Amino acid sequence: MAFRANFCRLPATRIGVSSPDRIRCSKVFTVRCSADSDFDPKVFRKNLTRGENYNRKGFGRKEETLKLINREYTSDIIETLKENGYEYTWGNVTVMLAEAFGFCWGVEKAVQIAYEARKQFPKHKIWITNEIIHNPTVNKRLEEMEVERIPVVEGKKQFEVVNEGDVVILPAFGAAVDEMLTLSEKNVQIVDTTCQYVTKVWNVVEKQKKGDYTSIIHGKYAHEETVATASFAGKYIIVKNMAECDMYFADRFTGKLVERTMMRKYGVENVNEHFISFNTICNATQERQDAIYNLVEKDMDLMLVVGGWNSSNTSHLQEIAEERGIPSYWIDSEQRIGPGNRIAYKLNHGELVEKENFLPKGPLRIGVTSGTSTPDKYGSSGVMNLLSTLIGN
Ligand code: SF4
Image (cartoon, rainbow, N blue to C red; front, side, top):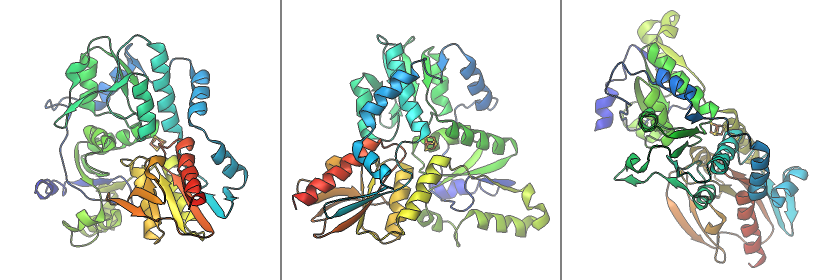
């Protein structure tokens, strides 16, 4: 119901669209950082980033930290695949790896800065406002390093636990403006690992706000990325998928439809006055999507998609394989495979499925990819588990 009520806000004077070809529609919610209409999130953030208690560049330990990260997260099996044109045969199993997969630049940098923060502040209490990235193993590793997640009670983060002088890490996908405001008032050391491509999206919605556009944000409405982006927007709606969208629109609500509607209303010559679109997908996500489109063209028996279950970009990789009718198994860790020939996996729409005898007998061709938050080691652990299951089969 909130969705319908808020949709009435859409016919604002102008509409800004985040992705021109795949607009998705979802429940609308309103998250604002302040009831104060004079509050300007951009100005606030700019000032925050200039403060002495703010760091987003790391602490001069890049080389040693990257060595450690490589030790912890790279994999021989992935190296073998890369060295052999992304395809290699073990026994009667051929594994084909997507040519772009796994850790992206932004994720690697976020993990690097978080590791550096632990070294820089060995005795400080260190908090993080959410998962650093969408990977359970990397998050667990940070927990082991005593980087603690701010507790959440009934959906609300308990910032009361944070004390002056503590260190607080903002994850790769950023934090909402109200969280940054709370933290700056507490006078803590902020270590900001927000990816620069995420802040680029914030800048886009900022611009749309200034032009009095309504921003259409494509994403899951409860996702931290979406919440953070919405906190920089003025008027906005959040759209998730075509199914939800069809509940509210007679036709498919795509960027092109919005554009056509605007053309009818205002005339072709004036459409740019009322409609703007930005493709905000980052290079890393685009490359992984392009790579899986190439991979699904190959002959294969099944696909293994490795990545955190709350990772949007991994979900899209699974979606592409499902759309092609390939039996595709989205796992968040290798532990989802086994015991025996058994797997617990997610489908793109979120259903958790358990399947016995998922690996057929005989020679197999398996496609493998992973989301931007997945270190090589965990993608390859999935492959290793598949191989050992097949050998024992
Ligand atoms: S997927 Fe893109 S936006 Fe997200 S962290 Fe990686 S580079 Fe940044």
